[in-house]
Image (tube, rainbow, N blue to C red; front, top):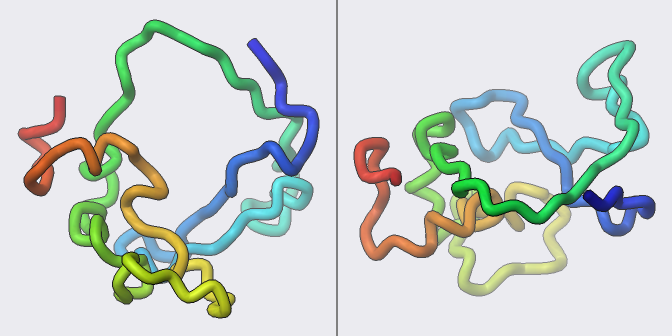
Length: 115
């Protein structure tokens, strides 16, 4: 198991102000978790480990809107040509930001179709 010692190696941490609204996505500062989640929350480390365990799936069951954002960003715009001048996080995230498995399937996933 490897610990990620440098913040630059950390994944982007996010939360949703409204779980039903992908445009409500907000960046979470790993050094200030208490600002987002309340007093007592802090990040000690992030660990990465290679494994032969089966892939975890099901994010589209937790976020029913996820399949609708395979070809567009969470702000509703196309994700084909990303405007890097836009500061809105929702303009830079889509379903593929959360699951590489969503892109592997030719048709939209339904909860029953998830392996």
